[in-house]
Length: 223
Image 1 (cartoon, helix red, strand yellow):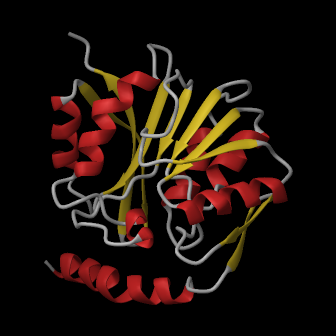
Image 2: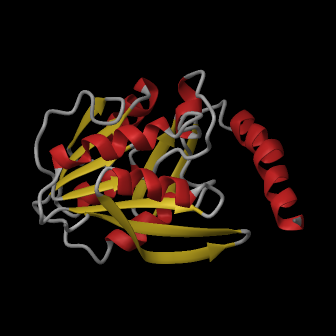
Image 3: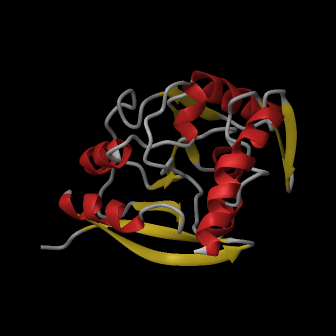
């Protein structure tokens, strides 16, 4: 109970403080990658998910792989993949995030394709070798551009649409990974994936401070 109250305080008190801090352009460095974060764009330095995903990707060969990042934000993950010689597409619903990803790729002297897209809507149908998803997962309705990094819709519409269309972009050799926090309703998301013939397997988990994070590999259910 105390832990739940503490997390609620973090979300409702610290989130506005973070948003206020990010109302100005900020710089961030991860290893040999330097990025600028425009106001309203998800900041990889304030949250654990981006760094955990990159650490997990270090064990996945990416050279010459068709790589898609859904929800690219600052572009940090996409830039990392491009530095590993992947063929990268970075997509985000936020035009500001897409422009941020593009500029950060140029700053780090790598080539990525950037697309403004609500999930797969504007991505030409094709097979990707690797898809990385760092989704919004709080069940509230987003009202403006910055909310899309946090809220997945009252009825988890983001995940309904994700699992409905995912099969058009993968084959039996594709690797699809997604990160979720214990703060979200993981079982509800599992139910949505199962309904659409996908299963979610935990392949990595790590507790950092107050939060347990899980990386899932998403694969088709074998009938």
